[in-house]
Length: 510
Image (cartoon, rainbow, N blue to C red; front, side, top):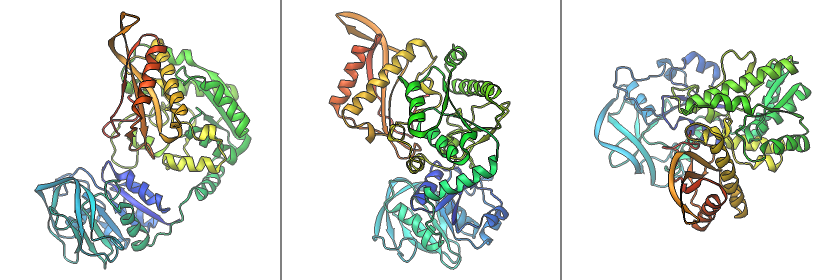
């Protein structure tokens, strides 16, 4: 399969480059910026992309690629910092500029022969840089410019090396996907043969090869990730798959009965039900720090898995529904990412867990997983459900997890989902839920002063959970949700609506 490799220099947008190229059906893989040239030679990518990054190329410890990468003969596209690396490597000069560019800028296209083929003379692009080119290397031609960047796009057609100062991967850049397609398909000649049908076929072959006759433990939650994982494994290894549903006391309303029944009735997969709510909630008592809560939940899942393996063994593998966004946020991606949140299925499991871990979905984004699920005939009751975090309500409870907060969040979230469904909006948003913390506010109920909890309503839209925007719900619907929550849930006096996008916020509050 033809591949485009993205070398990650620490940009918050590195993953989006992969996403955009995959959307054009070309397989794209993210690797560290310092991947040796010999490794890249073995991969034989059709083209290489240098991502952006926060460093300056003239700084002493700035990240640089293996110099031999430029000698491999593969086309290279540098984006932002990657653009500056190319200029610096070939004898140009980068300097700090007073004419910094952050946000939208008008890109004037001077040459439309390849990278900007079939585009208008001017497009809007997204800039984010404080350094700029002072002098271009010999052999490079200016392809586009902005008011503050005389060389916003450059190219050396003989070597097939290109650099662009702006970010084509973000939605703010017009024709950004087309620019990446021009590089990956027209310049690099990568065939658009990446699709979910081929992913399923190759993954099943890989699973059978790696697992052999071993048995696999797979925890299912009813979310699309673990459901797709179970369906994929069931097709690959059949009865050697053992699915379990663990009730950690932090589930949505009626989750346990719904999931077990749907798996058996719709997918033909038997699921063992384990009620471990007491041990999870006991461990969480007195804990209010978000990362500590996630770690505890990961450890308790491991304890449950070990117990299940003893009673139902021998089991050699633990299957995880880890997705690419989980890997990135947990700081264990292939690039120089920082830890945003520890996901229990990535960084939250203890090292002493005596099961080999297999993660067949870890290279996929959420929208790709949904496509896989549909091809595996996962029913709509599971396919169209909103994503639900593994730690459950614990990450929607700010501060210590208490019985009172669980009661409030569980009921309030059901009201949010029910009202969205009644309004015909449930399937049109990515995720919707209620959260609660320790803050309280004064209210008046029945002419009496009440000092109650504040419930936060969060409804967002997204494609892959890497970025998200808050949903502009009709005011009358927000009002209806608010009235129901304050009227029907004891000890709640205020309801607020979260209007923070990701970034800077995350989807879940903890």
